[in-house]
Length: 591
Image (cartoon, rainbow, N blue to C red; front, side):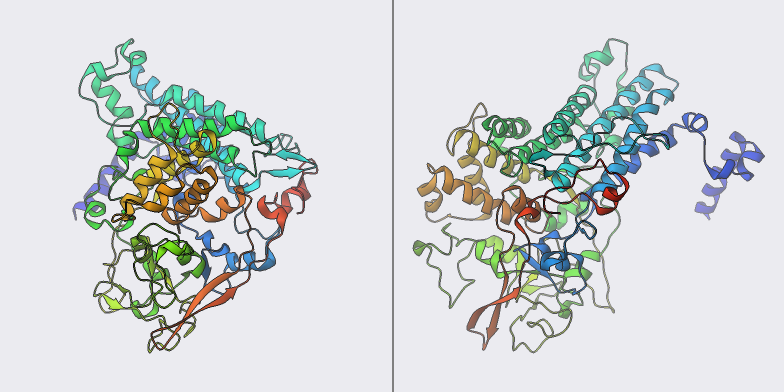
């Protein structure tokens, strides 16, 4: 009854503020004019919301299933088709052209209209809202430029190109048929947007307690604590902040420094990436700011369940809304005996990338690895991220048997929802979710857009290339320091001081391989591997392999799925439909 009264009160308020004809008669063709929109700040902010809704990391898509890290047990998966030879400019599961350009169109419209609306009667508050909204807009435009360059930047006619640069909203009278700008020009525009955003946004959003904490530019015109908190306080958490914009800059700089996009191996680009990531990390204390519980961020149930008011755990830099309890991820990925669909099957390739607990790769004679007991004494992250044969899982700790001769549907290729590789994904999933139809339960889940571990790894990669493994630039910590801290957190080398890391700490090439491998493990199943392989110019065609187990102790590696990519596919295509419409758009070579 209280809910009905509340709704009635809202309707009464609307009637008091609106004429009957406004409530009953729709606007012409049900489309609001700009003049009416300008009178409604919420509708102007809707332009910004449309961009937020298009951020690719709002959810998982598991593009790892198109790489050497995983396969799909859904034989109709777009990623499976893509990885096995059907990737084309008119069939692109990783296309970002339309979505990102649509977001940029909304953002350009926002920049045009943001100053034409009054957001508060108080002029101080109004100016702060104008600054925040404008800063968010520039920050998001930089983010979508990054995603466009990642997905569609490439070589055409011997030149490294980005995408067309649109800085104003387009109308039916606009000239859409413009060529792609150079990659460097796109990066310059991205950095320009970053700088504008940083001029307008606070580093973080939080409620301040005294006037001395108000930035001088607002204190000068008499802004009060309550006014500042109304705009930049706790209620704004998870909106684009200065810290998030700094992170976008570091991501983009790493892309630009990487082999596929840094054709001259310009060392200043590596230095830029290291500097941008290092500046971000210095603000949380450098290596000491690495969250000790960051390995299992997705399953730290007490922390997740207690989160509120837009707060983040120490591992999470930016996240989407937690929302209500769900079990979608578990439904997709739990093995059959836990009533799941077993969608993402980790490969033997990925399993082999996990070192031994002593830190040595399993290929190193000093590792102690044996093929008869392949999961013994391994990196603890292996069992935390992947369900192995004999692992326990689910709310009641059921043993998962993935062997060929398993007496359950969890076994290799038993039914459509069974594993194709001998492994199931464990990472990201909450083990206290119960999918049993009799006792079906859901839980809250974190959906990170950015984790601090990613930026520690960006710094390590860039610093190693710019200055070598042991040098720290001006930040007081080196690539070696970062990797040592990440591996210590994982529980590696606890008995021998990580002798392997110590043996390579002066070898830039060996450290490069280790950093790339740590990135592969730490960010597994979070949508990085496909993009990393391409920006590193590495082989995309490594066959996805699995493990066949019989009689409990007979292990044999099997080929599961061939990867069919061409060399030119380190760059993604410009969509076929866009090329049909606009002749000035240059296609990347090979497509």
